[in-house]
Length: 361
Image (cartoon, rainbow, N blue to C red; front, side, top):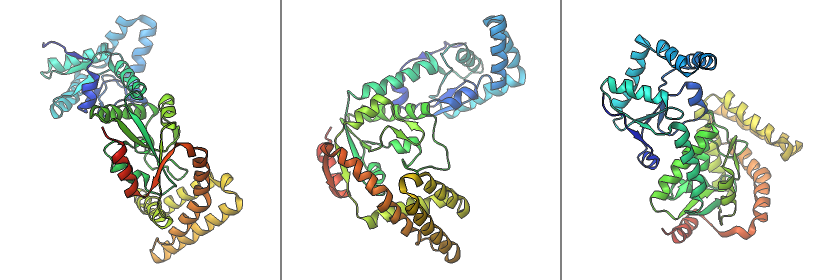
């Protein structure tokens, strides 16, 4: 059998976006894993439960024996086959378990016996996870942040995506950052969000970027929390305000909340409209009863127009009402409290020009 290779070069794994085999049980994988990791477990959830009971009653040796009994014959053959197939498709793949101990070592040995050599992570998930969390903490000493603000619908995300030195926190959190920001696909786990953020930071900083641009998000995006010290660091950053005419903001929001959103719901107007009305209900207290009623009425008229004529243009009316009556006053109030942080205001072109002059490497 070939020598079993260990690696703790976590930075290289991040920079190369190395494919990973997570041999932990599905229940562990679902709580959080790493980008480019696939769950091909050595033992499934039921087997893990049985082995755990055995471990508590009779100790490690008996638990290991039970594991070899449960994962033998055809079961073992299928699992080694799945690892081999992944390794064949991704020659640079590595594998890991929770601490880099028995499960990953057994998996590595079985793969080697089948003729496929693979490297396993020293310290496993726990060590790699610790490295990524530390990378987020330490990153605040390695770059200067700029925060891009602006009223809802002004096109901040669109601008961010055009910049090499930006990190899209909303994208990483799979949320638009508002009451209407929920998507059909669920948000990642808190652990997955943090791990992906760390990957993005490490990869950006390795390029020599000294300034990174973020959208003005706050400490929470939907159900996801930005790590506390990192969020505090961003909260003190200079603010760049993107100013966009209301007509353009309505078009951007219409495209996102209506055209693209309806596609996500497979053009099911009933499901989409229920999601919009639920979002309106979530802001009812802050919007006020009268304005909430007016907003819902405008929306229902627009929905009726779409179902009868096939045109969705009428939805722009409630979108403008929502922006002007709800989002703008709230955002303007928050920005006034942070007026001292505002370093520049301008159109998309002016903001890009400003950033290109002030984010030199």
